[in-house]
Image (cartoon, rainbow, N blue to C red; front, side, top):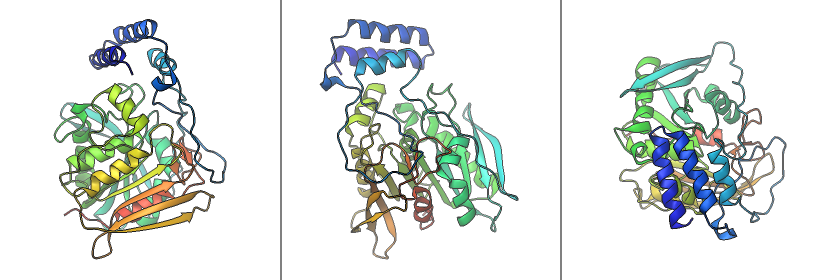
Length: 374
């Protein structure tokens, strides 16, 4: 991206944040008219979201062309992003289970959320998992696609799905790239932590076994939340996401998504499990490696074990596990061969799922339940 265009996009971002959407759109359109022709080296980092509804066998990773910057910016200026998904309906709720619609409010802001309490509720307190959806998704859609409510029945967990409204982000993305949404005591991390505390207090969530996970922008937000609140969250699950602090505005977010980014290690240990497709054209797979590296920086001296397997749906995958002296896994990296930007092992009734991959949902819950907050 040229210096002129980068500065212009930064100005457009500031206008958007201040609510001056017409002025921001006009500025982007002006930038497009005045910019030099785009070459392949200026391609946009925004790739295709992938929804896989039919089983596919694993295939070799192949380089694919990306959309030109001008094309994608034109779509942004028109008020939409490429390949918007149609959110799915809520999954069925079994007899005896609850799928509540609630609202959390703190620091002058609020978020609606769905809370699933399984029919097979154990004795309180129960493990609690906070699930942060990806762009354009809804809590119902995310619940359907990940199948996390089914896992909650198996493992006896509460699951919460906060909703990012379009008023906070036009594409319903969590704002992981904004400095005001990256730290403790402010923005979206504070909202999510406050929501978790509400559920612990009012619905029997276990303060020692509370976890956060997310997909794409939700995965990036989950890393931020877990790093900012190690006193609330015992572990984090990141699917197709990015490391904390990998961007500070929209242009740097696009750059990180396209090429990967590296940031500082977490100051405190954060047990982390990462899933990423090797053919992800929306968030570069190197970001998954960066998430893992960020976590390992605060957890030295672990034993590393590599393994490989084939999912029941046919996808090959590689797993790298980092364990302590007691054999407990503190960090895992699942690389899914040929997979795109989609939840591995997900249900095609939800958006952005790949039913042919390993079951990310069950593996995340299995990983989470090894850990209690110190």
